[in-house]
Amino acid sequence: MDAVAPIPQSAGQATLGEVIAEAQRLLEQAGIESAGQEAFWIVEHMLRLPIHHVVADRDRLLSPAELLAVRGLIERRVGREPLQYILGTQEFCGLEFAVNAAVLIPRPETELLVEYVAQRIPAERQATIVDVCTGSGCIAVAIARLRPRARVIATDLSNPSLDVARQNATRHAVCEHITWLEGDLLGPLAKQELEGRIDVIVSNPPYIAEADWATLQPEVRLFEPRGALVAGPQGTELHERLLQESGRYLSPGGALIMEIGAGQARAMRRIVDQIPGYRFHRLVYDAAGLERVVIVERVGT
Ligand SMILES: C[S@@+](CC[C@H](N)C(=O)[O-])C[C@H]1O[C@@H](n2cnc3c(N)ncnc32)[C@H](O)[C@@H]1O
Image 1 (tube, rainbow, N blue to C red):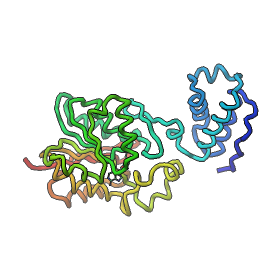
Image 2 (image 1 turned 90 degrees about the horizontal axis):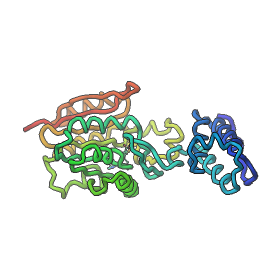
Image 3 (image 1 turned 180 degrees about the horizontal axis):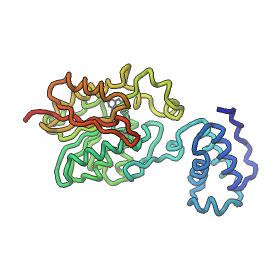
């Protein structure tokens, strides 16, 4: 990456068109692929303008306060902070989710988990569904919207994450519909009397192996919570613990649906074979052709 020219600190004077051109140049120098598009989004967000106004009003002079504010956001993006944290939002399953540095930014491939939960649970069924490692609450909220008759429980180790998740559930009018529990994996279910009664446990747990952390792009490594990403030396540690804990709670025929990292499917099959009471049901690939979701069923009657 070339050295990035400093962002002018004095307010000075500039038009919308000049600021967008300056932003695009700085973002390109910082190695950001869609620099032009992001420059538009940041300016549009900061000035609260619809996009056609940004184009039509190119000659409008920004006030000193507007100029400083826009440059402040561009500087954050030049430092490789993810655009979603700067704008404070990410879309998931067609819904807008608030995000901040306390939570992982929802990824499009995670929508597969929601799709496979919905496939197993008919709309009219009063099922019990648990989203483990809920983060921003994206999975729990999307499921609660799709399956309003289901009882949804969401857990996370991180209290700040649960705050964001509750905000997102309120925004989408399902907060009262979801039970929020703080703690380690299924530990918080201990007093809920749910043994053998859960229809689906769904989870996107941390699955990066410790050694791979340094190879991640700066947006992830420098800004997203490490505890949301790194599982341990193998990357499959949380999946294994979740499999061990889920047996007690799943109803016969109930499913554990988990996101995995590319290349982890073989290890997952081995782990499932070693833990009694499960049947490996299905491996799902994402749109890029990468192993992404494993579905495991509880055997028994
Ligand atoms: C990969 S993020 C997934 C967030 C969200 N479900 C999504 O798909 O975008 C993993 C989440 O697991 C939580 N977490 C990490 N270790 C945990 C544990 N042992 N028990 C419960 N939650 C944990 C993190 O706080 C983080 O919110």
